[in-house]
Amino acid sequence: MKKLRLILGDQLNHGHSWFKEKDKNTVYCIFEMQQETSYVKHHIQKVIAFFLAMRSFSGQLKTDGHQVVYFKLDDKKNKQDLTKNLSLLIKDLAIEKLEYQHPDEYRLDQQLDLFCKNLNIPSEVFDTEHFLSKRNELETFFEGKKTYLMESFYRYMRKKYNILMDGDQPITGKWNYDHDNRKRIPKDHVPPPVKVFSKNVAELTELLSKQKIKTIGNIDSENFIWPITRKQSLELLDFFIKNCLQYFGTFQDAMTPSYWSLYHSRLSFSLNIKLLHPLEVVKAVEIYWSKNQETISIAQAEGFIRQIIGWREYMRGIYWAKMPEFAQLNYLNHKRKLPSWFWNGKTKMHCMSHAIRQSLDYAYAHHIQRLMITGNFALLAGIHPDEIDEWYLGIYIDAIEWVEITNTRGMSQFADGGIVGTKPYVSSANYINKMSHYCKTCFYDPKIKTGPKACPFNALYWNFYDKHKEKLSKNPRIGMAYRLLHKMEANQKSALLEQAEEYLENIENL
Picture 1 (cartoon, rainbow, N blue to C red):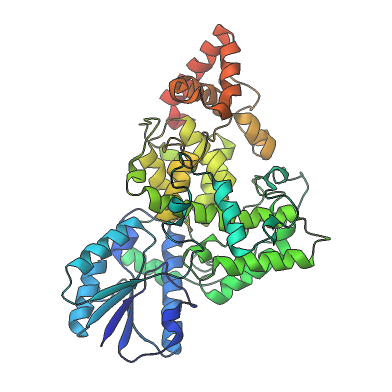
Picture 2 (cartoon, helix red, strand yellow; picture 1 turned 120 degrees about the vertical axis):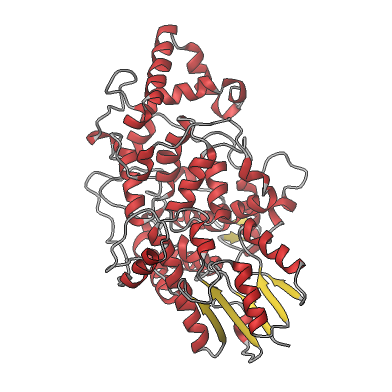
């Protein structure tokens, strides 16, 4: 039987069982398509990273003796649509069976499911053999529960894979060291140099231009820095463990305009397209920590491992438990358009300007820049979740819907009403000033609440809680904010709300 096996751009798993045997009657297909470059406006580095990784993976399959059909973006046969390309190959190659792996995105899952229902040949779907939990495992784990507490699922995963465990208890007697991982970068602290990879991608940037692919962001065509092969991804993992793990947890929430990578691993792209397996990453960190406990505290290793087997698996579980309805949630009924400076960084707010410009330059910002700078502002300003969703999905190299939308619409924007986070993640300028070096060189003053030099985060913070008091005031995790708001003198509260209204009316000029 002649089989066609589809490999999507985020299914570049060298260790998949599909590739253990070579079969002359099995043809693998990989497509570069406008369907995928254009469903949202992506960062140019993101598009190029995907294409480079896909081409490299295809080349390795061919080297290993597999039959591969690869459509480049400008291939004359390329129909620029997934199912049209599959139909073409099924006909041209006289395919008798179609096989594919479960897509990680709902839209592709639905597209392929519908396509296969109307095929006149059999089809079969396989696991990607990447994630540490099944699609429905989180939903089953929390069956009958009103809230999906990440910490509970994280502990379950620790036990399931025996990570940092002593029998059924955590190896140190403590599960979570998040409280230890909230330090500001000292003024003169110098992190290790950033591990980057250099590749000339002028040919690909020209291809995107000729094909009229609309992108955002910047790129140095002569010096593309992201890992796009398994070998490079393993090199980046090794660099992180040996050079960054020691202070990863300590400074994982810190922000500075001086360094864009700090101690973060930047492994999310390699993980999300499956060049790395989460368990190999976690085990590598656990083993290195166990051999270097004199110089690396448990808080560093646990903090990183929690992101992989806790947060990452949890977010995927939420995605498959709550889609497609999750993509429409707007609990706070926010409606404002995204300010135009989200696309160029031209704002007087230094924290926002830097986080946005960094995102445009590198297709990357670490999780606190995303959550407590750009996401924080968007939530305080009442930006429509669709607007901020599209921005996050497009601008970041690691943004694939299953992980992006749960973090954005859930964790960041509280549009889900508390499915992911038990409270909105908002702050005034105080938090930003505490955790970053942004404020000292900003046009606005973080200590001023009203007036032309007042930091917008201050007035918008109190305006947010005042506006949403009916929905949020009974939340036990934010009771302090409402107690302070209640005690506030009437003229002070009025001045803050007026300041917020002025800023929102002139949001394009902040």
